[in-house]
Length: 521
Image 1: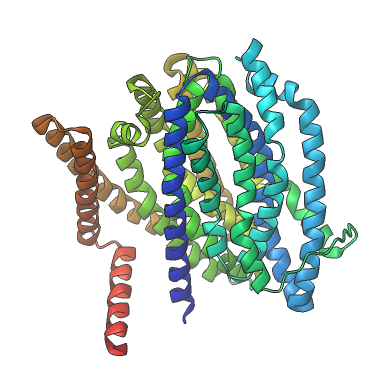
Image 2: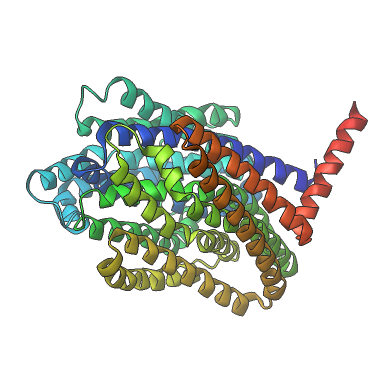
């Protein structure tokens, strides 16, 4: 099987698994919204969970980014057996660090909540501390999941990582359907801990097939551990800054109208669907290929691969941005509006979604460019750019929140993402030379015009149908679905007429696959 075919198959598989888990994730969020609403209780829960997620994401993303090249290096020097031996050293060391963070977090929870939940007082403040302490064991499970995820992906096994969110969401859903009525929101945090650990159920069978056996060994002097230690700090800071942006937004939102934190959270979940399902799938598969080109000093190959990947990311994120803006209100309505989540919450959440969507393209470009820098073993440049973005986000927050409330916080996040993407392009051009930006700009303009045509079609089809028929909730959902399908068709036709290279390549590839299957029959 060719590299192209393997890559395409891996991307499609990750998309399918991730899309399925996201559907469950939306169901989970909808159940939380229905059972707990959008008020003081959920604001407190999401702030506490965000505080814990800040550290767990640091561990998970940092490990996943740095571990893969280190494990590849080990395999080259010592073979598969050596790779397994070093894996246990990484696992035990990082898990021990996570345990220390839990101890520190337990005692510093009040201070953390004073910073992150500055609008919380009295019982709400006490509840935030309690929820944070309950959720701290998530850090241990995040460490285990992160280490095993990095190892499995270094072996080219992406399915277990993509499917890990299934048991996580199922644990949530079981609790929310059968037990949430009998227990308080504290039990929801306990469920979050159990759900995080449930991801291991998917990873363990794959680990056993590869011959992994746990051993209790810690060797801080190991050369590969030291290499990992050198790579980790800049990545750690970059991830921390990204999460800190979210925490700053939620901290400032906690002082706004009740439900502002929850609205930002629900909107962010919807906005991230494109990133987590499609863009992440592309980046996950392309990262090892970028690293291979960089290690071989084949910068022409790296640029070509990056150029193609960027165009694919733009093909997805630009129309997704237009679609999110046009259908923000119905998207929030059908995702969340039921039970305790009313019309007012829908208006607040859809407003945040529109302004989060503005930064969708930039976030996709930023994620890919960051991996390009990591493949070049440059972890400092993304860190520095993230620091600039943090400061800019804070300044925009202070200005925009005065006029736009929680929507201003969402817009500030998007503006800082756009700034980061532009500066990363600038620094990458300085590092490896001409990136072919002129050709990419021409392609981007074609994609943008096609997306606008699509957006206009969807807007008029949806609004005309709703106004003309005054449909029931179910019929309106069908109208939304049909509007999206027609919009996709219009978009593809427009891309074809504009002769966008990636679309024609995809069509030719599909034709070859169909022809091959006919011959095999």
